[in-house]
Image 1 (cartoon, rainbow, N blue to C red):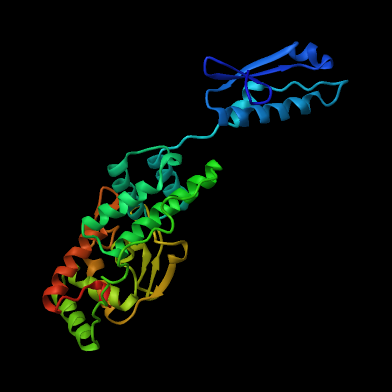
Image 2 (image 1 turned 90 degrees about the horizontal axis):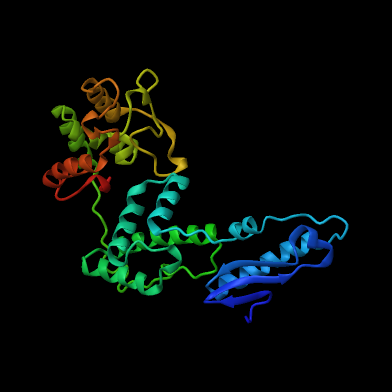
Length: 313
């Protein structure tokens, strides 16, 4: 016997077990018996849904529509996805920069494993935060990592139709914001000095300073430019995605004026290019390594401008 309607339990497995109405016997036989699940909750859901389908089939006595029982049950089986699978799917669908999400996912999997997304709990989130705190990450970094994971789990629960609280949402980070500091800012005199030094050096690394400062672009947007994105005749650059680097958001695609120090800098760099990429030294294996460029230009700026970096424009 079983407490679930229209089921019996044999050796730990629930079976759908139901007498067929007389007018449908020719189609289904006298009884329907079909294995459902060993899990009571799953068996209950499957039994309810199969009952609804069968009763719809039996509603018209003169013409019984045949349903495929196995197909009905299979269509209601929950999809099982691991965190790594969901992360890959989320990144591909959202068309976002993968690295921030990949870093957060890699850390979490290293701590608690690559589990079915439905199996993660609040303790996993707490372990994640504790690990980042002990690794001396700033609270702002911890919050960004949590935001990445929260977005992935929100997506997963919506796709899998899971009625479950996101374990990574509303996490409290001890001392959040207390470790933040205000970056310094280049003065106008420092900017002019830096731009003049860059133009006089013919160094691709140093020429990034006027290109970033005068266009207001993100570093990856400049480092990942193709020569085809540059229109010197009309003094324009086109910031658009390509095979080596994406843009941060959809609204990041734009056309900008190319004037002053930025125009002079881009002429020099373009003259040193390989005919395809503006900064070929940072395009390797079809990928844009903007971080390498950031490290190089910041090393110079910190030394000559009292610790300031490209983020201080």
